[in-house]
Amino acid sequence: MHVYRWRKSPNVQLFRERGPLLFFREVCRVINMTEETSSVATQRVETVPDQDLRFEIQTLPDCMVEMMAYAGPKLTQEASRKAMDDVAGQVSLPGFRKGKVPPETIQKNFAPSLEKAWKQRLAERIGSFALRLPGIIPVDPHGSVNFAVQKGSPQDGATLRLRFEVIPDITVPDFKSVEVPSCEITDELKAKAEEHMKRSIQLFGAEWDPITDRPVEEGDFVDLDVETQGDTPSPIFQDRRFELNGSIPAWLQRTLIGATLGQVIETVSELDERAAPLAKESFQPTPLKITVRAIQRPRLAEINEALAKQVGAESVEKLLETIHEQSQMLLTQIREGTRIETIRRGLRKILTFPVPRSLVQQEAMHLGIHAIAEMPDAHRSKLTQENVNQLFKSMEELAPHNVRLTILGKKLVDSKLVEFKPAEAEGLLRVLFQEYIKVYGQPKEEQMRPLLEKLQGAALAQALQRVALRWAEAHGTAVQQVHPFIG
Image (cartoon, rainbow, N blue to C red; front, top):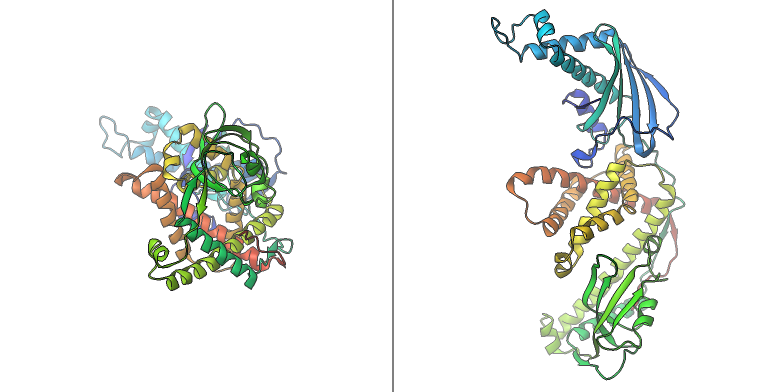
């Protein structure tokens, strides 16, 4: 068995345009050619016109394809001639100038090198035809692909076996089953959001009375440390303040009512019925250790000139204007978040095609980097390598859906159903680069170019995911839904 890497050619350029170069260059993994090939699709045969070449193709699980290529003497003799030229240009013998060694002498003295060069040339030639077959879109046209020459010779023809990952060729589905909620922003909701924002400002300037002589009651604010239990505990929150007013998960409020200052509570998380549907789908009970660090009650600050200056506003009037603007922005953000979440839930039901495993792993890594970058600095600095590995592994449950969205977005663009603006990917690239720095630090100069190539692929993938979501929002079914804002 041999592993060959494609040389650049017009055929590779064809697939640069046709195939989605959306992900890392190294995603095409080396595949063990002795793997089991159960659950394969029905074999199909492709014959290359004007070439003595025939392919038998089987589709394997996880978007792998395996091809048996039967090449006639025309191709093998051509590969042999080119291999002879390759070796002749590299070797020298006493009495001969470099590049002038007779073919029969090369055959006699450099048979192993000639054999290797012949197989290399044959694999490249057959590979160039394989990449142009209908429905064959490799994950990475420049990646390594395994070829095993089963039998044959330059004179008689040869049989090769090759295997690599492909992007599934999908059709654009019907989106009528995808619900797009309205989440109307009413005047009543606007007023409620403004009151919520005002209270947040008042809490910012509040004076806090510590409570030490009684247990936690409803309406208290508690400062908590929360970490997972197990062999490798991992912090979730450190010195995080929660208000016991019914806005936190019901199981957590029940757990905290009656707790005392300094108490350490061992419990297990429960499903929050108010959680988003996607969060419910991925929920798993987690053993937790909760430490009550403080119990407090606030004395709300008055909205006056002093509070305005404290929060950086020029006047009370300017502060009220800001509160109005921010409350409207909050309602819009919550509405859009709910829409996207609902649309994703509908798309999960209709996008069920298989996706390449390597792309799932790469997407999981990006999701993990994003999650780590979003953590508070204190939390992020305490992560162990095992914590990071566990986080990346957990993201593999969410990653397949994102990969499907990317493939759908590419299909929509290729079909000219939507116009794609590269500027969107450029903006995402800047965000991804900043997230990378947060997690791994500033890259060295020699690392910059390959890193940017990787992040460009990831940014393009995310931009295409947004294309798919916008298309689904425009072509789904509008439904009435109450705005999820909770004041």
